[in-house]
Image (cartoon, rainbow, N blue to C red; front, top):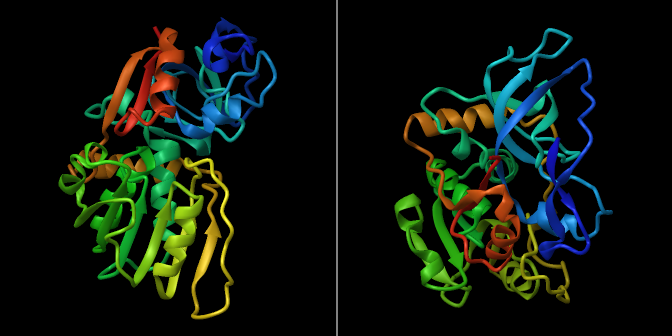
Length: 300
């Protein structure tokens, strides 16, 4: 089958190539992939993978063969999928039945592909941070995939949402998603902050720590700044930093996010879309922060 595989000589280290067919376990379905969504983690991780490795967490398509165990959706069902072992950027993938959700007829399959990593990450990070009603929630890197979902979900939870971006252009549209404040950097952000979803890391994380109020929590999701920082003493008021990981068994949470989409309460922003033969162009745009929202490739 065809797949986007690591090639150390290719631009962006990925190119269309031949790859082995997936091995399908008894509790897995075989999915014919139609759309794939890019994440920073996919692309950064591919740089350290050997030639021939097929990355990719998020993909949507149609069930080509149901699970031998009888679990999960039947052949022909439209599904969105994810897997911790990656391998999604291929014509076919084997997926555990608890790592997928059936896509309703009124939801576009390409948009559904954006939900597993970015949407579930935002949802679970907020859930782990405690009640949101009336609390001040800061989302850094708010114009990206995780950030845009986090702004919407925090607003739905009743929070006062502060969306931090790198430029005024990157902040466009965030107020319509539910942000009460859209700021560039942190200069205008005041204490206390109760919950922070940080997608940037580096020196900015140190500044955020100083803005936390009593009982405040930072969920460290990403480090797009690619910078290190010297952290201050943790002595003082009760506050915490957590290294966030999404975890397995995403199917139920993906289904919940699609319910919000159907009800018009969650919007998916696809800022770049094209053929998977344009992987180098898409990766460069995403890593260069020229994509507002998610980048989606069509398996054509």
